[in-house]
Image 1 (tube, protein in one colour):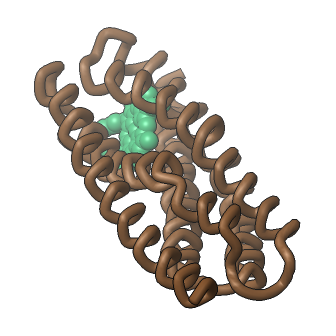
Image 2 (cartoon, rainbow, N blue to C red):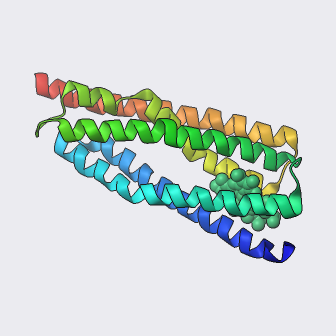
Length: 194
Ligand code: HEM
């Protein structure tokens, strides 16, 4: 069984590459949304999320398949950095699929239904959704935390501290991005109404 360990590690790290690529697309989409000033622009930018979908689906499955194999054959289930990674990965999957993806799909749906022209109040509200920005901020910073766990393989205290610190950092990034978006979207709406 151990003979396949390098193959599992390869599959795992290839999945990590896909996850990073998917998050890169998401990051570019979110950054571009901040500069959109018409519903048409929001539609086009949201359309780019279709590139992230397959990467976010296949990447985590490969991470999980390779990771579980390596844990089962070599590391065991009571290793601190692995258990913290497993729990965090489950939480990240829920946040990614259950919150972030849902919010972005709703945003794309609203953009698709909106009439052409400047961004209206409903679409502006969806663009300013704080939960969407905070969750994506946390998920971005968690990538670094996962790499830290995987490469430095710390004990319980440091593993948990890494996740807590990265959550706080990601939260701050998200709050800042939400505030910046609110400022730029409000300006557009202000110009509209004025
Ligand atoms: C389900 C959660 C995960 C489990 C159970 C897991 C498990 C593992 C295991 C057992 C290794 C082999 C370590 C070694 O041979 O030295 C490994 C390596 C690695 N993992 Fe994970 N992993 C998980 C999630 C992740 C995530 C989300 C990322 C990145 C975002 C990641 C990135 C890496 C990297 C880069 C390596 C190579 C490290 C090295 O060879 O030193 N893993 N992982």
